[in-house]
Length: 267
Image (cartoon, rainbow, N blue to C red; front, side, top):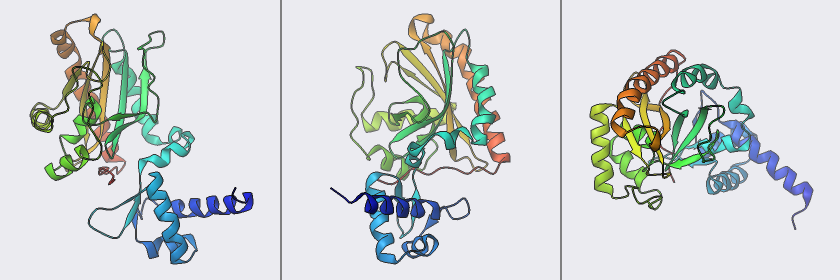
C-alpha cells in the first residue's frame, strides 16, 4: 500500500492545484496552475490529469486551459451552506411550497447532470425520493436540466446529450434525441417545461430557467407535486406563473450579484 506520508503529501498538492483557481481566474493553463500552486509543470500535469479523471477538474473545450467542475462541491457542502446564493434563494423557494407543490429546488448544469444547490420541502410530507443538496439527476429527462439546456446553443445541447447513455428511468422517460430537441425548442418558446412521471412514477415537476442579462442559463427553478393531487391541467394553471416569477426574481438577484452563466462541463 502507499506510504501514508506520501498519500498526505499528494492530497496536499492536489488541494493546492484546486486552490489555484479563483473567481478572477476560473480558467488556467498547465503552466499557470503550476506557478500558482508552487510546483513544477510535470507535477502539476500529473495532478491535473488525476483530477480530470476523478471529475473535479475539466478541460476547456477547444483550448489548453482547465477549470473546476461542480463536483468539487462533493468535497464538502459546508462551503455551499455559506454561499450567498443559497441564502438569497431559500425564501423564494419556500414561497413555492404549499398546497400545490411539495418541494421547490434550484439547480445548475454540470456536464450531463443537473445538480441541486438548494431545496425546500414541506415539513411533514414525504415524496418517497431522496433528494438533497448535491444530488444529481440526468439533464436529458429532468425539468431542471431541460430548462437550462433549452437556452444553450445547439452545439452545446448536442454535446451535453452525448456525454452519457440516455436510459428510460420510467416508461414515460423521453430518450430520443429528436424528441428531446423538439421539447427544448418548445420550452424556449413557452419559458417552462413540465415533466410528468419521467424520473419518478407518481411525481410531476415543472421548471423555468434562471437567465443572465444575455439570456444564458445560470440555473433553473423547479417544483414537484404528486400526480394524485390534481390533474396536469390544474397543476399547470397553478404552478407555471409562480415558478416563472420565482425564476425571474432569482435571475435579477444573481445578476445584481454579478453571477454569470455556468457552461456545461466537458467530459
